[in-house]
Length: 111
Image 1 (cartoon, one colour):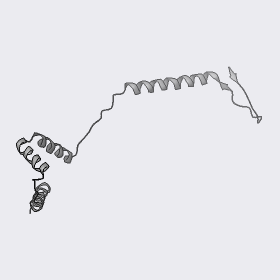
Image 2 (cartoon, one colour):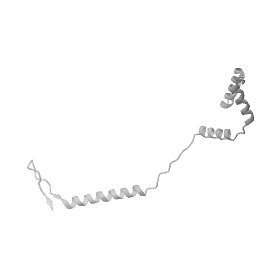
Image 3 (tube, one colour):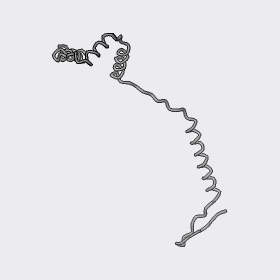
Image 4 (cartoon, helix red, strand yellow):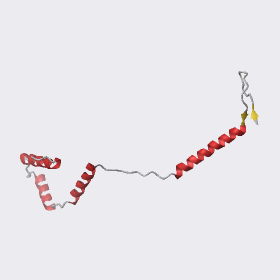
C-alpha cells in the first residue's frame, strides 16, 4: 500500500511512500541492534591490571622487612616505663646526628 501526497501544502506532489521498504528498513535496523547486543554480551571480559613503580616495590619490601624484624620486647617494655614515668631523657645532639646519618644512608649521600 502506498500513501501519496498527504498534507501536501505547497502543491508539489510528494514521492509515494512504499510501506514494504519502510518495514524492511525497520527490520534491518532491529536485526543490526540484536547483533550488536549479542556481540557486546559475548565479548571477552576486560582484564584489569595494576603495575607498581620501582619505588612502590621497594617500599613494599621495606615494610615486609619491618614486620619480620625481631623485637626485643623486654627493651620495649623498659623504654615504655621510662617514658611514662618521665625518666627517659633525649639528648637532642645525639638524636640529630642519628637522623642525619640515617638520611645519608637512605639517600646515598656520603658524609
